[in-house]
Image (cartoon, rainbow, N blue to C red; front, side):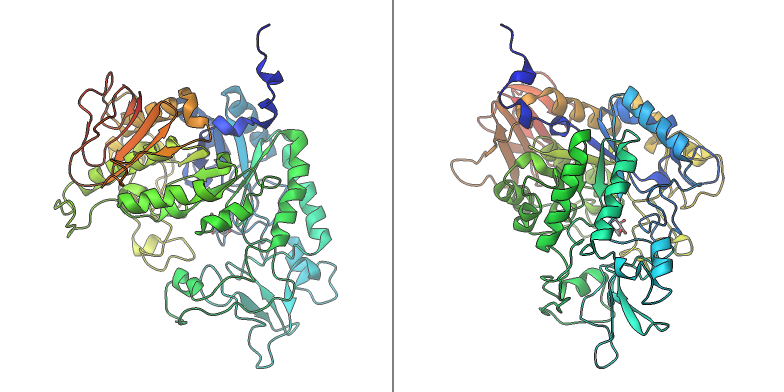
Amino acid sequence: MTENFDDHPDAVDVRWWHDAVGYEVYIRSFADGDGDGIGDLHGLVERLDHIADLGATLVWVTPIYPSPMADFGYDVADYCGVNPIYGDLDVFDRLVAEAHDRGLKVVVDIVPNHTSDQHPWFVDARSGPDSDYRDYYIWRDPAPDGGPPNNWVSYFGGPAWTFDPASNQYYLHLFLPEQPDLDWANPAVADAFDDVLRFWLDRGIDGFRIDVAQAMGKDGQLRSNPQIGPWDDTAPRWQQWDAFDHRHDILQPSTLDIFRRWNKVVEPYDALLLGETYVFDAGDLARLLPGEGLHVGFWFELMHVGWSAQDVRNAIAAPLERVADRRSIGWALASHDEQRPPTRFAPAADDTQTGEGSRDGADLGRRRALALTTLLFGLPGLPVLYQGEELGLVDGEVSDERRADPVGADVTLSRDGCRTPMPWDRGPGHGFSTATDTWLPMGGRTDDDSAAAQRDDPTSSFSAYRALVKARRETPELLEPDLSWLDRDGETWPHVVAYERGSVVVAANIGSEPIELTGIDGTIVFSTAGRSGEFVDPTLEPADAVIVRR
Ligand code: NOJ
């Protein structure tokens, strides 16, 4: 009798996302199909072949809903519509059909922690305490001194409360004042979202990326958070956030109840719940992934880790040790919220580790980014690339006058650099749009940055990422949960991060000197340096990585 995989006792445990490779599309900057200078769904449909050619199997599309764009779509005014600047439901349906034709799953971004202040629910709620929608949001009387009801702060800096003079109450917003938080303790909110989820599931989508998944439930008594650091009104937003122990505003047990409920909604559709689980403690990530709610949650530590083998290894090891089902860890180096990795890893002008200063900084940054990505692609879980990573893009240049991010007063705070439009073709405008003025500037891209220049060049970033995706997809050992660290003589290997997955070894040189990987030989499955065949001279140059089958 031939073994039927579907009859295998473990098969029930195998879900389609367990061997998926994700690709994030930041819709405003992916491809402009109608010439208004803003990316849209038509443009995305036209460029789906690029994603399929890369080998990704899941496309996460950032919010496409009607929105006043205070936070570029993460302020939703209608959860069941398409913003006319992006298209309409017909072109959305075409996207789903065309993606499926290419073997690509479609994951839509859902923003359930907050709405836009222009959402009809909030417009009504703001009309006064008697509004039917007042309790969809979190309103409270001022503290005795007239100030905010508690000490919670916004992720975007400053207090998380805005005063509404008409009703003499404050409303809560963990992000901009234009993004009021919904009250998930109100059953009507949960019911409304069940309908929203089914609306998109019935259109054939394959899952949701859930914005701010760690923060949807709030402490029932809205208790103040213990302060653990000095408060500074002028400090960057994350420093203000870190001044508190966030035990009451985020990571509430009620959040898990929401995802248990959603799990039941999506199950009949075999759809994925992929959480933006924005936490930096692996124990917190583990708590958000108990097995019956979110299927996958992103791990964010790697978006901040520096070029240090010890730090990289710790950042990878922490969630592997804590999360019960390792296949539920989402791995990413980049997103539309973070500096692009080749910029982050470019050596500073006074870099003492490499002695290279800023000379060829971007190239070294690119090689480091690819080496780290290789480490991530060997792990159990869901690896996700952000548009342009496959082209080795550095942050685009955006002058002060052109800054658009509402939380980006200067270059260190702004998210604009990672959001400039994709360079598709050679030549002026790089094929993103027929408009000369795009919503963010193209950012100083060169012809070499473009997908057209890289697609058929075997030495390009695109070719390397495509080969890496292929290696991931075609090496079954990499999808298994088991992993053991490779150390040298029982000691941590200085400047090397290496692990074994069955008979496959994944290793990266996170240092500045060549390193001999004594004892590791076999056939090269993937090499950042473009090596193939036998790994006979097992030397890794700085910022090189390999996958070897022993
Ligand atoms: C996370 C999103 O990725 C980010 O772009 C947005 O500003 C916040 N959530 C608020 O929705």
